[in-house]
Image: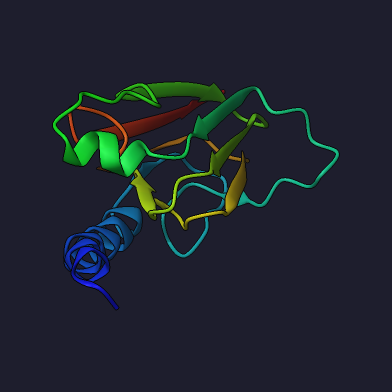
Length: 136
């Protein structure tokens, strides 16, 4: 591992741990849940129409490291129960969006099945945070 990768790992690992803790403490409605969070999330299949689709382009981490203000996702996203989002990471670096970790070259797809709120860090928004609200 080179220094850049070790530095990124040193930054992202705590973020992923904190994101997991936040997921465990997320505010949710009734109606079941996933891992005790009060909000149920499932992977979306390939036939899904994504209401919210985000692309992290190549060079995003380099732009951020150079001091550029990069905003890929909003600081707060409101979705409806049943909606699905997709985050495609075409960057060479891994990124964190709220409670979601999206590895380099990977695509994250999630469908939200219950009302709730997820909050966490965000490496692709200038505020450094991301809140996802699922409403009925």
